[in-house]
Image 1 (tube, helix red, strand yellow):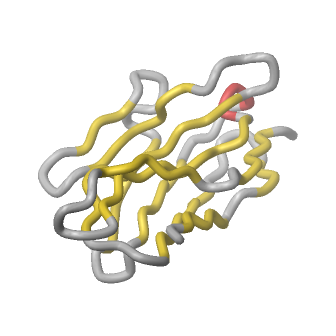
Image 2 (tube, helix red, strand yellow):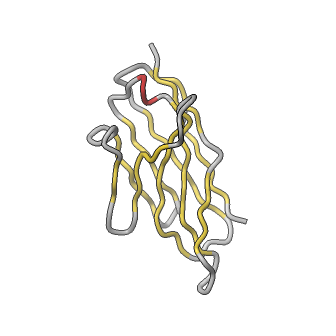
Image 3 (cartoon, one colour):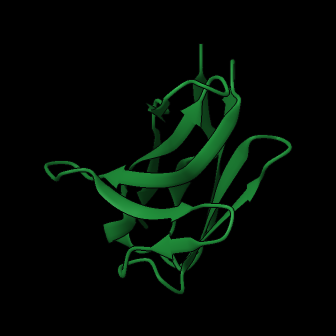
Length: 120
């Protein structure tokens, strides 16, 4: 009953910017970490970055260009991407560790993915 829905992907020229959003809905008691991953054609899915209540981490390849933020009230995480490069082209996936109840275990949930294409 938990869903993660991403939005904001598209086509952008090198050097441009995009912002992705991911909203969680359904039976949610608490959200631990939320994050973004990406998968380019022919490559494995890789971590872009994660955010918790007190920490944010980024892959070296995006440090200084990408920013993750979250709105706990809206159960939404954002990925602001600046200075985009062709090698950032990938399907971007949202991920969240969510507990459905006080005594429920935490499960990992994934969004459906949104395509980001960086090309002139």
